[in-house]
Amino acid sequence: MQSLLDLLLTPIRAIRLRYLPLLLIYFAYGSSVFVAISRDFWVKKELNLSAEDLLALSVWLTVPWTIKMIFGQLVDSVTLFGSNRKIYVFIGAFLITLSTVMLIDVVGEHSLLAGYSKEHIYILASVIGVIGFVMQDVVADTMSTEVVDRTQSDAEIKKELAMIQVLARLSLGFAIFVMGWLGGELAGIYGYETVYTLSLFIPILSILGVTFVRLNPVPASPLNKQVLFGGFAFAVFVVLIGYHDIPYSQEIVFVISLGVVLYLLRTLVEDLDPGTIHHIKMAMIVIFVYRAMPSVGPALQWWEIDILGFDEAFFAKLAMIGGGIALAGMWLSSKFIVDQSISKVLIFLTIIGTILSLPVLGMYYDLHTMLGIDARTVALVDTAIASPFEYIAGVLMLTLVAIYAPEGKKGTWFALMASLMNIALSAGGILSKYLNKLFVITREVREEGVVVIPANYDELGILLWTVILIGLIVPIVTIWRFNPEPNGKAKNSPTSPHA
Image 1 (cartoon, rainbow, N blue to C red):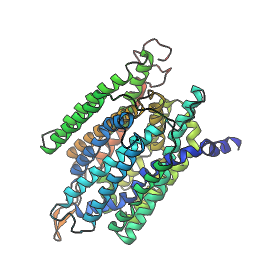
Image 2: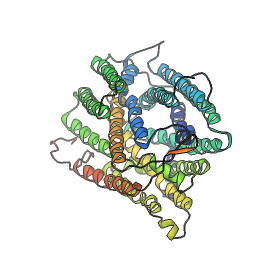
Image 3: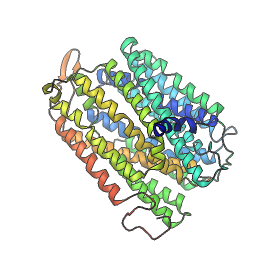
Image 4: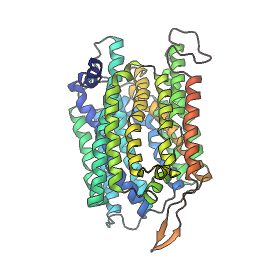
């Protein structure tokens, strides 16, 4: 009983007043799911984009996350109006607002952007909004190391860094729990335009948070021209590649961006001892592979809407349950996350994730009907059980990043590591795109009441099998081969007290 009480009280005991404004910024980011259900249903109904098109767009939308090193350098070294932290949250809030106004106009079919296609406006607004969130995310991650009490011992500081990451994920989870459900319910009652209009509260929350946050004083560090100008050159390169519609442009961007980020990371840690560098490399490999696993893509949700009959209200219920259970799971596992072996937990999460993929696979083969179980019941139970595990994996990875953040370079370090993780997501998106090319799935598309593309979900089953097996085998082999623990048995490990 005492042990359970300790688990329940650990996050409460860890909270400090100085954390709250920072957590509000993370809450604002989590609140972006407020429009998720409205967006998904509106895109399905109004935009003529295939599953492959949407997966390709998702890859491009990871590009701003990939070039986070630019924002990291700005946060570390460039002061605007007397600030190299808070000002960038304000800029991000402006971009998020601009993106939202554009989407309100196109979803509500107003005349502000008349003459442009819905698809182009949606893509442009999505990119602007992502840039705003990226900018705020870089600042929040940097500040997460600057609200820590630095008068403690190194061991206590590491524990506090880990706990702040837990609290940040709890804040995100609470936002998803409340806002995902609320946005879905409002979409079904008042419509998509109203939901987008109400979402203007999101930038207001981040502004409130950054206005009241108090940080340890950290002087601006010298500008790393390699990182800043290399990042800008890479950004220009990405825009030119995308604008000219070069064949295999996403694959080219992926390879170049991976090389650029790895080179810049090497310059950032070259002053550390060899053992620590080796440990960081092992952790980077595991993080990259874990996040590069493919997904089924939007076809799964289309199938759930068209075949299973899931509507906005039910997806809202799933969001509420998923967010709530994730919040509870993160809360109860906070002590476990701080104390346990990262590699063992990641293997455990991989196996659990695979097991929890099976109910959806079973529904595709109509097993729920054979067993007399309603599809919505299966989806609710599966969502409830699966919800906490993705958040736990995210906290483990962010804890590794926070522990090794070099002093005076934290903004750039977080940005580059986040870039690496988002390049991994791009790899997963590209793999998902090719799987959707191999296993073609289409939703019904009508033009003026005439069906121009019929729905076809015949190959969804084999796509589900492929994604599940890749997601099980590849991470476990990688974690076994490249154990990221300081005392791990990764092969070719140098002899070092840190290795």
